Image (cartoon, rainbow, N blue to C red; front, side, top):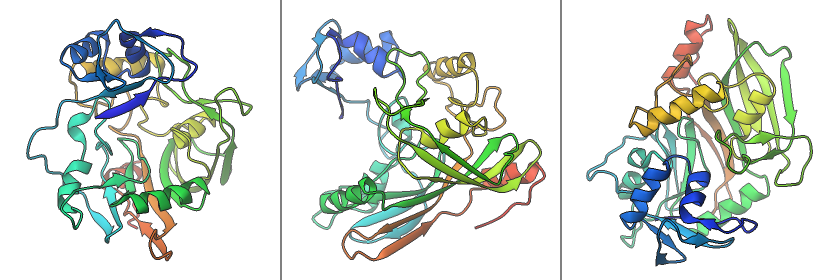
Length: 323
């Protein structure tokens, strides 16, 4: 069951209107059908499409279960009684959510790493977008979750991504230090917005990138996010004029993104590239450093560079590197 709270400042509106504006992976007919099927609750009680919701209400959604027997092979980089660290392939969601409830792998991984008392409990300590590959840390109990959350909040977890972007970055070192806020309420295209000042829903965000390799019309970057905002790397690089190769949200026009949404609603393959050069955004979480939640020892976790990213670099005249 997925839970979300109605924004505190939200004016009273119907449940259906709030769902359509807030979660665009279903249209009005899709949400109406889900409500009729009993998949939605308001504050723990059955609800209906025309019921008014208010700021602070908790809305719970139970997606249709993934097919029985789902198995997903995910390379494991580290495993102990507290953590499981995997090299997440692209095109898999971290949790059951959104339009991609059948592509989740955490449930399958939980069966592989059950708790010693027999109760499977495996939760991601952070997020990676569906199309982003690389290092993903999952915790096996709540004490580990609290310890890692504190490290993330204090900025003690260090991450480095590999990104391939459009255009040739003019300088060897690129810094974008600009606040980010979420999409405008009711926006048809749900991009995070890069703004000039902190406040009014925006929060400070800083991204640093170093050029690793120049290609024909593209650049390979090593990217370090110093904060952890929604879509931070994608939004900051697009703001700098160098969107990620294959980014369906930040790398193409509103019209093309909305065409992609319609493609998904027609049960199309999420990997559909449209007019983009690749089937997914070329962003890979290559390195992550943190302290072990139990021992305090330093963990440095590295995910090998994925084949599709290396193949694209090689096709653009760059030298394929395996790390």
